[in-house]
Length: 298
Image 1 (tube, rainbow, N blue to C red):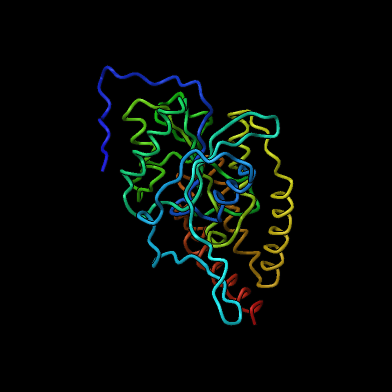
Image 2: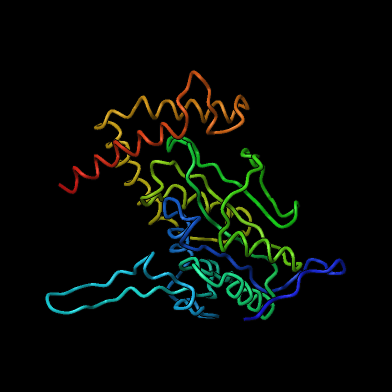
């Protein structure tokens, strides 16, 4: 296994001249499938394969079993997991690298070493990661994004969420940390997805991630199909809330969110005596949305 040297005091941030690298891994930072849906919009289907990882050594097949079709008397169309780096171009011909696929379950350091080799080989000046986490926020308010980077001047937007917490790591977060140690510029965006929508596709969060990328890089990305999915998804959410009587629960989340954005609270999960906690609201939402899904299947 290859191990990279740690950055020394004499190392300075690199100023590469190649295209940027955007990474969106489907795994721990995958609430609402936001990063995966965004990657689908960034992937043209015509990208040039730059690097392919040995997923067979990095993927836990029993924890995340890939789908395979069964047709009458035989198996067909196996959806084999792929983790690749592609050279893509936006609608105006601007190049960028896209790394998308399942987050490695094993061999994180080897994975990061391979990414570093690609960065070095193609003179990549900046990596940008996108992801999503579940939070006590309502879908009726603008998505909140937390920006991060290996240097303060790489954080290009103000964060409303300013807590200092210990969180479980991910391959993406460790990649950014290691790149910072080795003198490479790395940054990213994490969008906050409503707790009660974390397990279903939530295009609104994906659009927020793409907007952040576009604002920073000037890329021109066609998101019409994603906007159409957003309209359909929001209509279905509103219908389920109305049918299951979830308006009061939604109102509580909205009050928490508004209080937080006004600076009246320190956390979206604050325990104000006049408001139910974000976890309580999320649990109740999960229950009534689960009932709705069960009714739909029946």
